[in-house]
Every structure is written in structure tokens, then in C-alpha cells.
Length: 389
Image (spheres, rainbow, N blue to C red):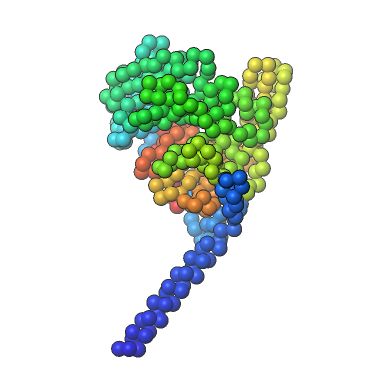
């Protein structure tokens, strides 16, 4: 009996020792570094992820549903989908900027109702650009041309249309985050490089914070930030994750509106884009070289360039993993949609190619880690998918 107890004790000891060795080996697999600089934690990740040295499967997409058809009932035919969001019941709102209306579907994709129409009256639109749902499940709609907010109830009733938010400014919102006490627009207000703009419940601006930092070309980025802002994610603890659209291999974390962490990853792509400046706009517009996939025209200037990599969505999953969706230029003819996956400690795990020559504009992730993306291949639709790894 004593021999059996002795053998059992030895087995337990060896098991615990193997576990400790395995944990130590797992930690040693990460070849990055962490340092502090001016109160900011900088996590430096290598080009290869922790999972690259393991027999670990790729990160893949599992498509579950879609809303939108090539032919079919009118409520499933879209002109130009601009945004999508979800309420607490799983109902899906799809905003169409071409038709200036928002259609509501239940979580199974069944059509429920339509809100809004083209016009300038209350609850009407000239150009819908962004939608969101607040804590009461009211739908918030921003009209870029009219520069105002319209609010609809869960049953589609028009509740309120605000006055022009900032009469002396142009607003280019990318996202709206709404709570009981405040509303936050993630976007650019002219003459300001602040990323976030806080409004009270009556949509009076109270504060702007967090500066945009130029990735490469100051003149280009300052002129066209309304289109190329980036992506952010509000974490449960109040921190904000942010990365630029022209992805420069950095993800930023802000706490109480102050930068506290930068996550970096080594990459073969050193610059997110190449750009040429033209003061002769007609000459620039006449250039048809397919190498240029980036074309931006302003007042008296034009930019032609090549995009090497951009972020098309930044999210934190319920298990703490952070995902950054990227669109990469591999050659003149090949671009790929991929995803960077980081663990909850921001250590790089894996980059995986998801699709080739197919662009997803990823607009929302719900509480079950289901993503909602706009896809325009053949016709406009909203794709709902999960990541598997």
C-alpha cells in the first residue's frame, strides 16, 4: 500500500513538473520584448507569431448568414450599403446611402421594416454615413450632408432630429458610441486632428480628445482623414484600442484619454502606402496606370499612390484575443484580406490569409463574436461570419 502511495506521489510530481516545463516552454516561445518609455508600455512583437512554430491551424472565416440578394424581394435589394449594426435583441439594421433609408431585419435575416427616405425634413436624409444603437435600443443615424442626427425607436418611429451639430464645422464620422450619459463620435471635425468627440445627451459637444499621429505623408493624411481615419474598439474596462487605416504596424491603447500602451509587430511592409503629390489635378486625373489604387483629389492638389496595407477592422473577442483585419497588396493583381491575431496580453499569435481579391468592410461585432461586414462582389450585401482558430 505504501509502495502504491509512493508511486502515486512520484507520478503527481512528474506531472506537475512536466506542466511547469511546458508552461515555461510556452512562455519562451514568444520572442518579443516589453519596455516602458515615458510612462507608456511598448510591446514589441516579432514578425513570426507564437503559433507559427506550432502545428496550429490557420485562422479561418466561417460564414453563417447574409442579407442581400442579386434578384429577389425588393427589401433584399440594395443600392449602396454604407453601415450595419445590431441591437440587444439581435435585430440587424442595414443603412443604404444610395436609397437614404435603413432597413431592419431580425436575427434570422427576415425583413421587419424600413426607416427614413430622401429629403431634408425630420427623419429624412441627404446622405447617411453612420448608424449606431444606444442603450435604449434606439437607432442613431448621422447624415453627413445635413450634419445632424436622427433618432428612431425600436419599432421604427421617428423620435427626434437634432439641429446641425456644429454649424461652423464639417464632421466626418466613422463610428458612433452611445450610452445613457454621453455620445461619442469617432471621426474628424475640420481644423482638428482629434479622433474622439464627446457630446451630451442633447448632442451638444463637450470635449474632443486623442490626437491623430501622421503615419507617413502629412499633407496627404491631413487632407483626407475624413476618409482614411482608422478603427477603434471600446474595451469593457473603458480602455480604447485604436489603429490607423493606413496600418503602420502599431495598435494603441488609451486609458482615461491618455496613451498607455503601444503594440508593435515587425513586418516586411515598412510603409503602409506610397504617394505622389500633383499640383496639376487634370494631369493626375488623366493618369490611368492600374498600379495606382489610391486616388484622392482635393482643392488644387491630387494624390496618386499604392496602398500596401490598411486596417479594415479592430476588435477584441470575448476570450480576450485581439483581431486586426488587414487588406494587403501582394502584387498589382493580387490583394488579400487577412487577420492578425493577438492573445489577451497583446502577444502576436498568427497572421492568416482569409480571402484573395475580395474586400470586406467590417462594420460591427456583436456580443457573441459574430462579425457584420459589407461585401460588394456582384451586388451589395451584409456578410455575417465568425473566426475559427
